[in-house]
Amino acid sequence: MSRFIALLYSAACYALFLVVFLYAVGFVAGVVVPKDIDDGIAGSPLLALLVNTVLLLVFALQHSVMARPAFKRVWTRIVPPVAERSTFVLATCIALVLLFWQWRPLPSLVWHVDAPAARATLYALAVIGWLLVLTSTFLINHFELFGLRQAWRQGRPALDEPFVTRAFYRIVRHPIMLGFLVAFWSAPDMSVGHLLFALATTGYILIAVKYLEERDLVRAYGDTYREYQRRVPMLLPWPKRAAGTTVMPARQVRRQA
Image 1 (spheres, rainbow, N blue to C red):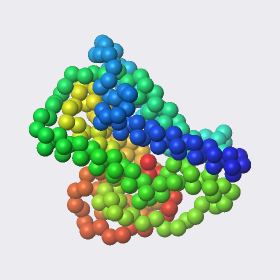
Image 2: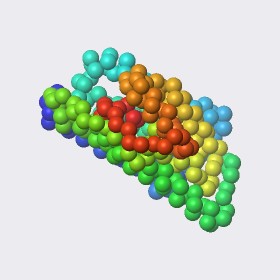
Image 3: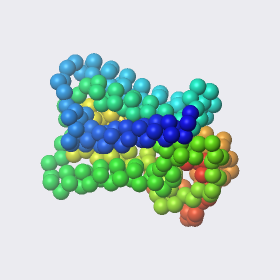
Image 4: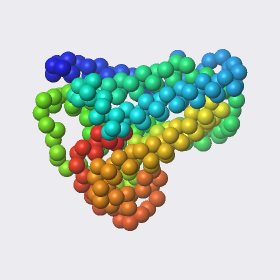
């Protein structure tokens, strides 16, 4: 794959990610986008539950399987290594577009917040959650996380500069996932469909982070990451021991999503 084609492909995948990310914000919050989580004709609740569960499983399987090192070793025999991360981003976007397109509403309300101050607080928390997601990607290596750096550095070895866990990464080990949780649950109008989405994504995040992501990181970095685990909580910012600055290899960046 020539450098120009790799850059063009990675840029296209990144542009698609930006569109899908912005649509996801509107889809969950119920603003701006043509179809949000509660839009559509309410049909059979059982059918909606089945379809939505399958859509969530498709995303979970795609995201988990393609992120595993064993899959990458096989996958890069087919896809050029320089395009592996961008292809992961592309597949994730396709899975999300399918979910947005085929999602069936379950509009019955689980809770409704009337007080204007409380509603404003929940909307503000949702905004903070989405900003935490985006900001946290820049605290590691945003452009490597989404495949652009690999395309730019094609043919040159990856830099092994130290990676410093700064800012949010000194408070929780996975601030990106914490941001998603805050955004998904900060809803002044929680429908059954939204609750299903929030519960399923919360369960997926807990399982994927604890039993997949964390194990991969321990296997890759051994005692360095175990020490990080001892000092910094996984998702909720409960205080542990005083956290200093932790230095890790930059390759952790590629595993932090």
